[in-house]
Length: 316
Image (cartoon, rainbow, N blue to C red):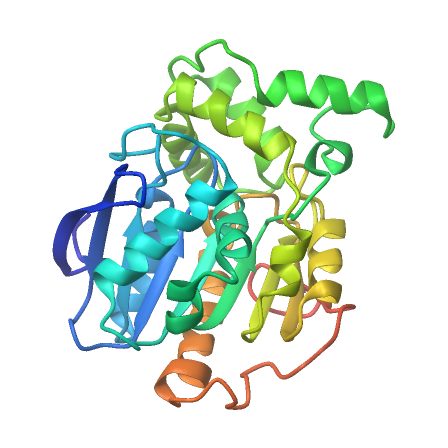
């Protein structure tokens, strides 16, 4: 990706030997941000955040989750997600160096899974959880237009775990993707970009990780996430509706902000890139540049109720 000042690309070995593709963007001595993408995505999902964060003087680490992008598929599971994040943190940060760690969807689940891990507690100064959930994902999802219940949950699992290849990006597939994962007002160019990223994920990885997500239970990890945390949700997210964000905020020891983005779906970092970048940068200023996790956050503590704002950051 041009214009981001890639310092290096490296392959990091996880605890089980799985190879992870990692990129480091920005000045080597700048305050660090580590970004974990979600299911069926890749490092390219964070392109807007990488550009924006490097432009304001941050160093940004992005990596492909196993089975995504340039990281080969290996054993899956929430413990493997935590192993991988630990490996990336150790490989890209100096001992004791603090960073803001942000995760979207399965990337947020990665953070929850790693909350009590030694490398995470050593390096995480603050966290942003975006468009994610900790448990009962199938029961809460609204991608199937039926009333909540066993039938909807079964059909949701069948849809998300479908073994058929996604095939090429077409006008029809973009409409399906917009319905399932993005807000109705998402720009066509962003829908097309998101489709290219999602359709590039291999069938085996997509299905294997969908099975993990179907059985997800990371409530204990949320309660162990002791650093200041911002929670962001799309108000019209069908995959992880805002009920998940409110539940997570209530469980977190230190939720400093909960925000619902009006008109935004599941792909908030692509649908509202400036907002997400600004919140991550604010956490860097408050908890990394300030040198203390006890510094006052840019938003302050707002409790579990949070606020609904537009994608441009205005109250809605």
